[in-house]
Image (cartoon, rainbow, N blue to C red; front, side):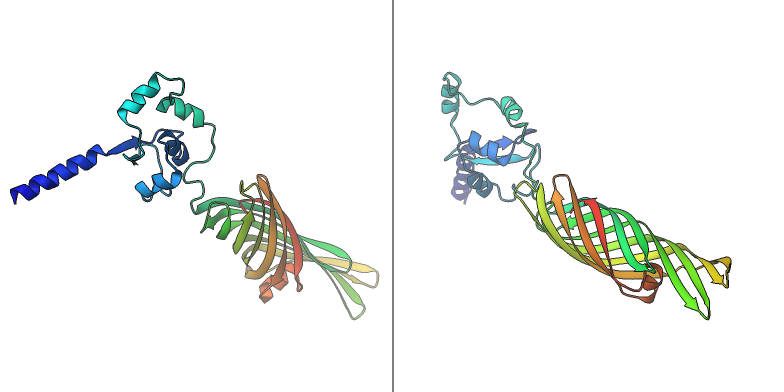
Length: 283
């Protein structure tokens, strides 16, 4: 039994002699560390499972002895013209690289949109809706690309002009509404390798919580007119939308088709579907 324990101890000790560790310094990447030890990035990851997803300053990486330079080799390099730079020098050399090992990891990204909606025309009048929302998109596959789901919250308003006639009289009615809007969406971002350009089709729902709404009605009868103002109930409008965003560097532009899903949405935004354009970030 004592001989077996002694053999195990000798084996562990010998293994420790054949392995070298490297502590990650600021600015280093898996690629730069692999190049230092004449490795491929794949070899370094195989020796350190999980390092490609959890990579940080201070992480200790195992360098296989079969490819790690010996102390003698390092000493010989110090006196030659091909001497590899020190860790500090390497940090400075690679500090220009903006990406890190976690640049492609899944995660949440800020998202925001400013939108103009062209509501259905009534009697020749142009009706408009304005929306500004902020929130996050969570990318399930890679940062800023691939499948994502998002939620935002913000302010929305709508101005709807209506024209009606009845028994020799006609009415001009202007309906003004204000909402807290919560858009929910899913989509898929197709981007270039540097993620500066791409196209993102998406679909989702908008929940529009009315906080204030009123009708200003002008009634015209036989050359005379009267004007009245009425407050409307505070209800929740729901719509569905499909759209596409074009990523152009640091921001994106896009458009969507909005379809009412309940009577409240039709009351505030009109009976028909409408088109909207926007500028935004995070898609």
